[in-house]
Length: 146
Image (cartoon, rainbow, N blue to C red; front, side, top):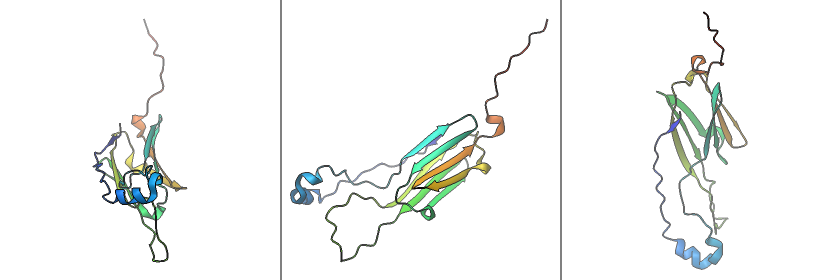
């Protein structure tokens, strides 16, 4: 079974929230607390493989790195902030930038040499085939002899 490696989920409060609260009023009340970039993952198992899907909106394929080492799958990446210029005044932004890293302990049944990755429309899909001996055998009837 996949085991997510523990990560630190500390969220820091923004000391300037009260300034924006008075300026924007109710429009700012729905703003979530600032947090680091934390893409959502999904892991699905079939008889012959696992599929790992990660939503990485706004992250270019060239900014994603996938490594398998000692039965640990590491997916990391970076969403780079657009360059801010003096021509624009940002009044409100809920967009998140920065880097992320997720690690998963792989089951021994994964054929690590056959892992494949695809990336389309901000969605990363990893296919992790199972080793042939790890696939469930088809049920078979055993004849009883006298």
